[in-house]
Figure 1 (spheres, rainbow, N blue to C red):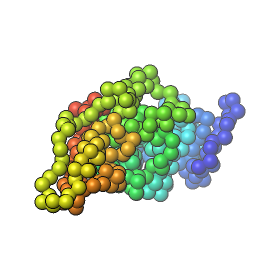
Figure 2 (cartoon, rainbow, N blue to C red; figure 1 turned 60 degrees about the vertical axis):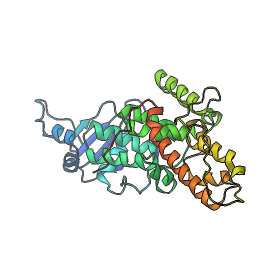
Figure 3 (tube, rainbow, N blue to C red; figure 1 turned 30 degrees about the vertical axis):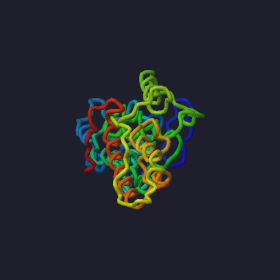
Length: 313
């Protein structure tokens, strides 16, 4: 959608995209007015249904273009436009796998919660979940299933949304995503102005995830030899012992998240010198450690467990 024009002082703007000639209700989100359908809005939103059920005041309702005016306070007109569009145009904000954008999701979350439109709220959560999933299997497939494009600062904005709406379930995968980039890249050119306590908390998390001093290893791993008795006298597994031990540490530690240890595509770099039987054992061990690391992410970000969420609606 094109950006809304800048109004002159006290000027009212009629929305070009949401001004239906046969509409019977004016929504006024200063300075923009939207001419929509009262019946559709009341059917989708419990709050608007209640508002439209109130008897008119003694002096009568404000009327524009023959329609009653409902004034909204504190709502961004651009976000109101997306919200109303999602209600009135079923193709505008469809569930996954249809792509969308993070600004639209943010608008839908805010206004669907404020005006009680549950199906839009859970739909917005489903889009967030497609990009920051709660299972390791879904994380590995996210590049093909995500509905939010991978643009700069997406994880940071999502982290702010998690704070705003209490979405604890999304925080572990968002933090892992952030930690998968070097700290200098994360900070370079980023425009991010969170509340002071959020900024301080992020710095602590980054220091845990990327700092050379005092790296946080999630697993209580030991330096055990992962070699197995493969029965081959010429097995060269001793050569690959160091690489296997190193990769086990990588898979089990958020400190090495920039190497993307949760991805199976990282593994082949470390299988040199392994015979086929030992290679299979190594692969299974990597899967086990990756699963343990994923399960430990909530504890790493200060949560007791990964919260559950429903995407019905």
